[in-house]
Image (cartoon, rainbow, N blue to C red):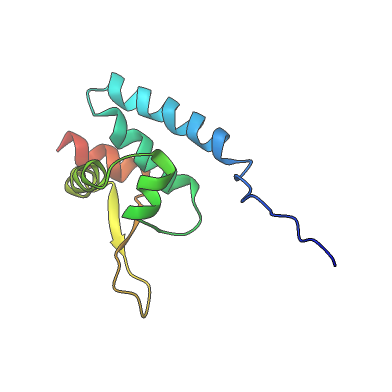
Length: 109
């Protein structure tokens, strides 16, 4: 009789590096007077090729659903994140504004 070995889910080896970059951007945003979480969340969205759901963001950044929701609302208000939809899915997804000059001009307004 053959025994099947249990396999543990593998952690994405890139994730620690992504989180370090997100932390650095969060610190920069905090220096400019914004909340660190806003910079971290925008960075994660920016570094992903596909839009992410609020659940994905919470899991990646280990943030509560409430904190994710409040941070997303602030980012949407500033115009640095926009909603994206996937056909056939009810859940909302989010993607970053990637034009730095657009973001800066919105903040100054």
